[in-house]
Length: 315
Ligand code: NDP
Ligand code: OXD
Image (cartoon, rainbow, N blue to C red; front, side):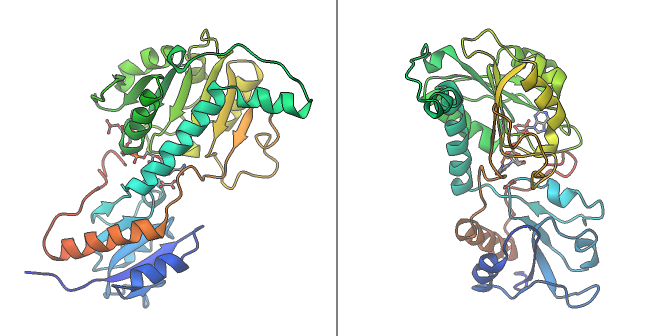
């Protein structure tokens, strides 16, 4: 039997909600706040960093929709009720992330920082040039985003390694898995791209000891870190130490332990760091809301929800 058309609670922190509201409202009754405690009318929640305790107060909640691919912002609330959690898997978001990864890998590979420095001093000097096949890019996290980035990088001629929790097979990629695969993966990697989710198992994984394991005899002049996963995967202080003692040559960081990155952070002015404001792959409501609305309607017809979070694994 088909379910009733559910009402949607929209709870977004640090995102402008208006466009999400307008697009969801085309098909659904949408509210920003429950109608008092234990509001029985709400059946779906569309969220980013919802207030703790909010979701567990809704007795008829059927499903939670994250407006991002990551769901650590939902899981941070230990009272989240045991209903399906749907995360974003969408061509548009994947394309944004692939563009970011290719952009940052190419900039480090083609020595963007060196040329920007030379231009500032009006220096006309041509450094030695490598080809992509001289460089191994290692992607931590071979999920939806990691696999797409790997495809683009293999297409450009880079050697690509990938590391995941479970063994994966990706055409043209040398894959490693689990704890046993981590050190061999790092030892074979010149440019490390982090596209992991933040879970209890991955928190703080990008630390000084891990960075020491990267390959540095590669003609790049040192190892490079690119993190577009989550800030709390990394230890900002360890990255600064690694940059300052030469363990790392350069870093491109889209995410930080504290966001927005405090104005006092040395990352801002560091000559070897390229900072973007958690903008590698922006969630665009024009692309994502239609997918959410389709999922809600399909669910009400009795079809299964897609792109569900494994609560035990935390992503
Ligand atoms: P997926 O869930 O599709 O993939 C996650 C990958 O990480 C999988 O390969 C998974 O392994 C691996 N993984 C998870 N836990 C571990 C672990 N303990 N050890 C080793 N590997 C692990 O996620 P997406 O690719 O869609 O997204 C990845 C992350 O990117 C998001 O969680 C989010 O944090 C971040 N993100 C950042 C954005 C930005 O703008 N900066 C935008 C969008 C996403 P397995 O294959 O075995 O499951
Ligand atoms: C996401 C993000 O998880 O934008 O999608 O960080």
